[in-house]
Image 1 (spheres, helix red, strand yellow):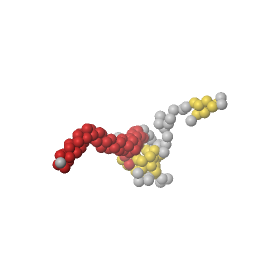
Image 2 (spheres, rainbow, N blue to C red):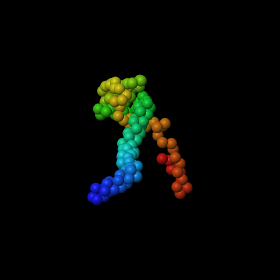
Image 3 (cartoon, rainbow, N blue to C red):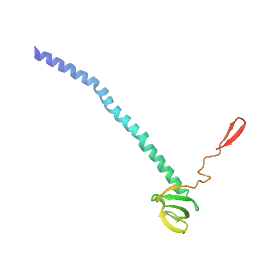
Length: 129
């Protein structure tokens, strides 16, 4: 009689597992999907934004811009070519040719890269940002 009871319990457990199999699969995949989504919003998306901003900054380099290289050299742009930039550093007018990708920051703001002038009315006055 114990054998029949064990077989009945095993059969009932198998039926329960078959019905819960889809739900178990969803419960396994859902946390993994959430982790991928969080990874996307916290790491991948901001990095793509930074890369896009850096590329637009490099494309908008002009003569007489003040730039900082990855090595910390601060200089003024003398000429911009396809892949390289000639910068002048210091009062002794030392000229250095660097690859565009070595430029970390442009300290000069351009009119086209500045945000549009927004007129805000507050208490009858127009403020320009």
